[in-house]
Image 1 (cartoon, rainbow, N blue to C red):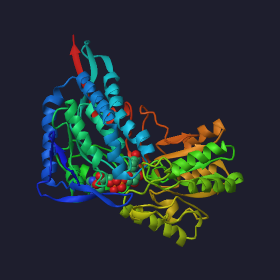
Image 2 (cartoon, protein in one colour):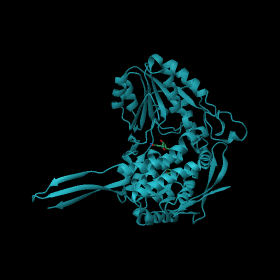
Image 3 (cartoon, helix red, strand yellow):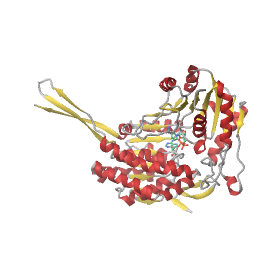
Image 4 (cartoon, rainbow, N blue to C red):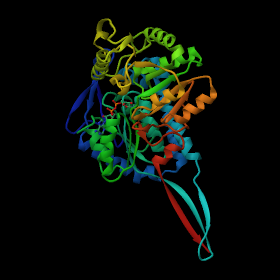
Length: 487
Ligand code: NAD
């Protein structure tokens, strides 16, 4: 059985308390291993190691050398691609086809991308006249913030973690990562990579544990943490923001969503079906950018519902290694209970269940896994729980609409504002809608198409700040203005 240890100051260590928790494989609920549960002692040690590295070799290293090392990290992840793939797939149960296409390569690419950004982005200079007739020159330099706490979710474990660790390290910070308790493996494996390529000890630290009254809370409330970057639920974000307020530490938050997909009658029908099928069901619906509310223009409503039903029913549940697998399990039994409670609510609130709504029959040991059926509902009012609340499962409600103004109002009627996906061939309308929907990310005739240089983040209760490209520098560095007066 595997042991998942903390990675502190370049060494793999168990918890002082000896406390552990189980890591289970969601495809059959089998035990993968035991994870050390970090407490205040481990958080203290990790933050101290990160601080020491900041003051020591990492803080003094020239940016070119830092960037070179981060390229080496990416290369080493790619060299150990199969190890990362196996670890990610065991923790999440997701199809290998997806993890090998998205999770691992993009997880590695984040290190190269931000190493290149920090080398190439200039700062500003201003010359000015002084009151005594002299002159002064202002220029800005970017300084790392210091020790960054990185708190991660379980849906894209390596990718979302390196999306933060990559820029944090590129900018010269050191990090303490708290991976999700559901997915400890790839963050641990990354420790081996850091040692192998010669990242100085203490630059990258991992403390495993839970959230409240455990490693997550102890880390985010630690006074020697300079900034906190977090991806996860909006409610957790509120708890972390309260912790960050002590000491006025800055936060960068990527939070929940209840994203609308909008399909106009003039859309390329097949492309729209393809896009919405992906945005609603990929990764078993466990994508923050996923679509759980679909609005379809009335003339094509029935045809659209029928076609999406066919796509949902064609998604074969199965094991990650099977190329025919269309959908994996949810992350855990606990999450499955939550998703199934929404399936029950939809029924109780009077939904028409177009397809799904339950648990698929799985053979043998797979019957103990966290499987659910892809599910489509129609006929609910906008006030229904499954239309308003984030479910994070493979499901969507589809409603008809009659006008552009109406659908913009429907899409915006939510406390969230992460993203939207709009399908139309009318260019003017596409631009109008993009300007009116209150979201951080608006995809037109596409979904999850990502250029890592672009700003990523949510509006309203879906986040604070933007990460990606130069935008990450706003959070991971502080600009210092230097003003020199000369005669
Ligand atoms: P979660 O909020 O339950 O947990 C995320 C992390 O926070 C975990 O590591 C957890 O241990 C930790 N945590 C929990 N309580 C804490 C506390 N009080 N203090 C400190 N840390 C604490 O989220 P999850 O279930 O892992 O992930 C799913 C959620 O993440 C969904 O809401 C989804 O929309 C969101 N998400 C958002 C984005 C985005 O980019 N906006 C991306 C992925 C996931």
